Image (cartoon, rainbow, N blue to C red; front, side, top):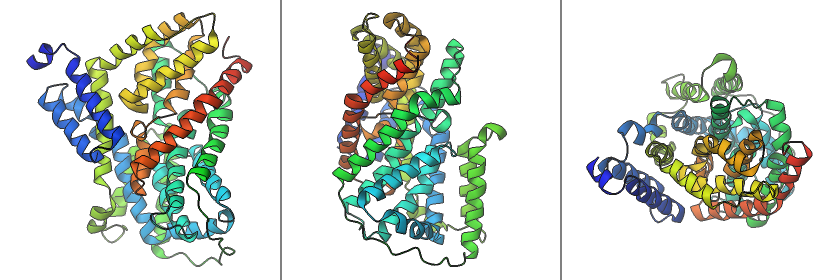
Length: 436
């Protein structure tokens, strides 16, 4: 720890964090290599204990990513993905807009019954890629990239409008209840965020993808007559049904979605009764992305553990134009603060840093505490770069989407959100009584 103290406490964590973020954002090195360099630097420089640096490997999110890849391999191998795609193709391939909006709608609808972002991506991505094949969209076509991004962006960004549907929401609600005794109900939360962060943002996402990733899908013929399910399809279908049921009822049985997914993945890998061989596991599971996700989570933990995030947050607050006489300006400033925090700790870590500051921010803005807590949802649900949201990264990796394409869509959707949807959100907060 000597070198740490000689550099002024937070200087080394700040330099390592900035370097990792720069390398990820600019794609100067492969993502997994930047991740390994972060782990190495953090340990060699004694930035934090090993259990903090490598906490991403202990996180449920890491194991949900890994199990999601295994389930995706199994769904493709037994033919369920192609079967679902054939059924959807006749309904969605009439026009490119219908195809994109249909995929975005699927990502949002599934979020109401399945609480895991990674689990939804694992189920949807093989189906949507098979749908792209049915529509004649080749492996390197822009249309195929657009559909993959629709899965990733729709799954993460739109689910922020449903309280139990993603990790940042759960972190925020748990921290608010622990720190301030503030409890958010399912329906009031949905009424506040679904109209704009769910429906309007979903329409904007579909429109941007249709414009930025133009394609002409091959219209599919009428859905073919159903053929009998193979024994492997029946077994996997039953496994997926049980997995979905357990995911949807996790509040009842108490088993986290990650461990449900891991159990399903283990079944898929069992000899004789399973579906995925060791060689298929080695070739189909993207360990590089798993390491990347672990590094993102570890980076957030290091920033929090060292106090860097809290220091940066308080420093930024001093520069924010917060004024009780100008609630709209204060509202926009709070959203901007969470967007800036996204750069440092990614979406999962933002609520852990922002929520403890909420009382101070409420006093500075004159806004109700519950309203200040709710503004962060807009910010952490709108990443400016793909690395800020692990589900988007995973979706891009599963479909081999170049980093620059994800970055372009991130920036475009963020521009629409902050320039168009944010003013509307402010009006909706006022109309629904959240501004006092």
